[in-house]
Length: 238
Image (cartoon, rainbow, N blue to C red; front, side, top):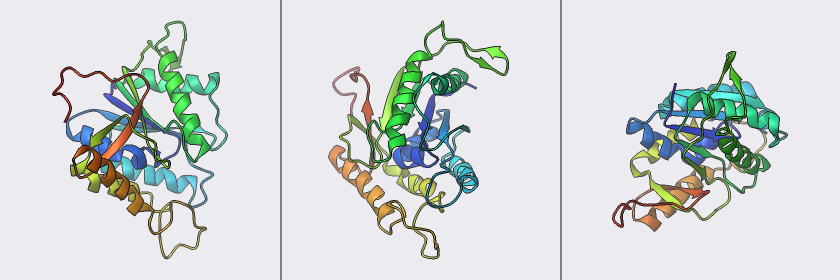
């Protein structure tokens, strides 16, 4: 299956927190979107990998993405090396996306920056004909996405552009809350984490509101780029 957009996240819930509004918007426009999680989030303080598996599937259905895969890399310990690059390349060549979205280039969690660099490098290497990968016993054809964008996570990085998600903020919130084990639950006796505080979801909403304010809309999500953006004409931006 060829996808228009493939979204990578180091952990289940990364894609939702960083780009769920944009994903939902693109799906509503008829784009074919998939998500690949690098790890199962097994080192997370709250919940279990098995619970996260179910939550990720629920979030997938909420957003309407066509496929979701998990590469099963070691949470906290995966690295940007040949073995991991080849597994990511297989996904890129399998789904042949025009656009890849991936983790923040710099963030509080060490896996986010690692995942960002790993996917970025794999996108380039995937276009090299002399790198051979096999999927289901068949040699894959080379493929390089046209664009790689990085969503923003914990740190307030300055985005290179922002996407209007005003009509999809509710869907973004719903997809995030699908990970009920990770966020505030007054009945939970599990340890508190930075994202399980009472105000965390409010902070996600506030960031979207503030980015929206900066571009003249209600809500927005920000992204950073790897190469200079180009526009077709002076009036092609909102």
